[in-house]
Length: 164
Image 1: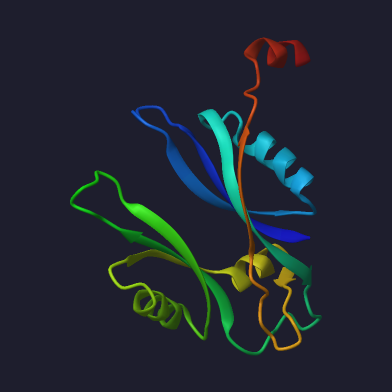
Image 2: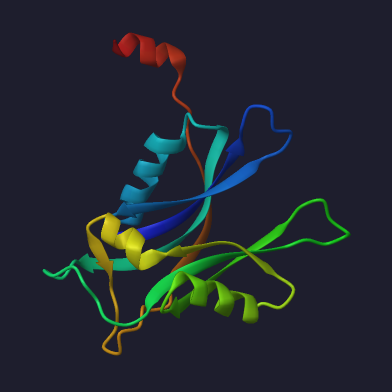
């Protein structure tokens, strides 16, 4: 199994432009991920689509459900510029003993950026019934990124009414 952080784009009611959301999903493969995204997001926004994802390997939880050592975090960084109306975003992965330490490390490693959010990926995996896979040194391998546009087909109302 894999933990995927996906960026979903589309139009929400009242928005002038496309918006983006990041969600965490567990799936067995990229094919299953695409099916799960289609069923979950196709009707949630107009022109809903997948812009890309980050993939982390999962394994079964240890029987005692505990792990020693630092946790693996993802920090969402943001920065504003006087020459743009929008906030630029980036994501950093890091090991830290606590959320506070992760936020501090993310700030120190990215001068000029602020931390919008920081998520413990070990906790996300555990909530889904898994653990992040680590190497022999206890490190999480570098996450695999995929930038790929996949448009979700919106369910047609007439097809839904015939189904009932």
